[in-house]
Length: 209
Length: 209
Image 1 (cartoon, helix red, strand yellow):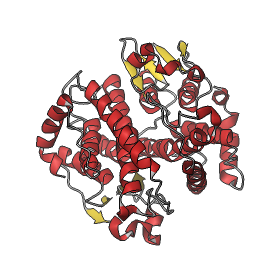
Image 2 (cartoon, helix red, strand yellow):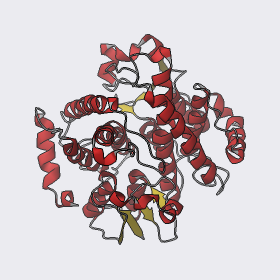
Image 3 (cartoon, helix red, strand yellow):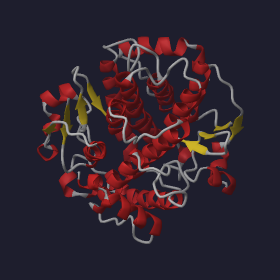
Image 4 (tube, one colour):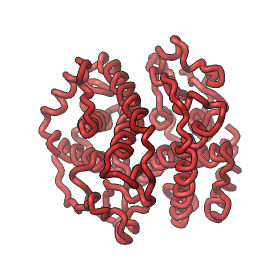
């Protein structure tokens, strides 16, 4: 089993945090996105979507998508449960994980990739180059604000995002909050519950992954 | 248990197809998105994200996100399994379901909402109005082409998208292919395997949901 990884990117970080929470270590294969190594013919054969993370399982299957990789690892290593116990908690974790991925990480990505000169011509991940669309920067910042406001509301219910237990949803949120710093958004500013949550989440040893 | 639904929208349709595959019927609550009923204070209290589908469970919990709702229903009604059996198949279904949601439905949505006069000022779902960004129309069409090409490649492996069995991933793909017709994209044109898949998926009684 190997994980194709890039240490600076938020999506593989979700898997690395998950591994740290489980106390697992698996070999990492470094794919340097700064050098566009995800676009080489060799990597396209592994993942035509040209993204990391990718998990190569022991039977040689390639899994992409952090949620799928982590769910696979949870089945092999059930403790501690990070996808919940029981139908309702499992659904709430998938729900908040999905909201974080689409509304949170997706919004920050829109800001970063359409704003940073480093992403000129690479406004989307994947095999094809796309020009930046400047209007997405301001829209992305608005979306970030809405997303973090929604999270602030949700955190009124319990200490962790989806339930009373730390879960994959919290991992997604931590990746989002830290990713937002890249575009100079402090998600915790003016949001007391999110600030308290962030202190708790960041204090876990897994947060350094 | 109730499902907040709008019959014209692709996301609640994913849940309705899932229910039909399971042979389940649950009461539907009609939320007329054309009349912006998702923005009323009553509905915001149910889902601050202002989207359908929403499942109200018997204990009064509201679940959003089609993947979470369907996973919850699968736990209560395991047969036929639409989220797979075994760690690898489950992960592959979550993987392809996620790719369809983000790369497929997301791309079609970008085209439709930034192109159709009916979505002027509503270029994103959710509680806040956003102006259309015309550059997203062409980019969205390119993304749709890339997405369906990737699907065509994947369908070389087996009759259904994620494994040898019809699954939630196929439901997401069916919703995407039919949604693409709204923006005059025929996903099956020039893609023989996708055309054959579409014929099989559409022939199932659940496809009329």
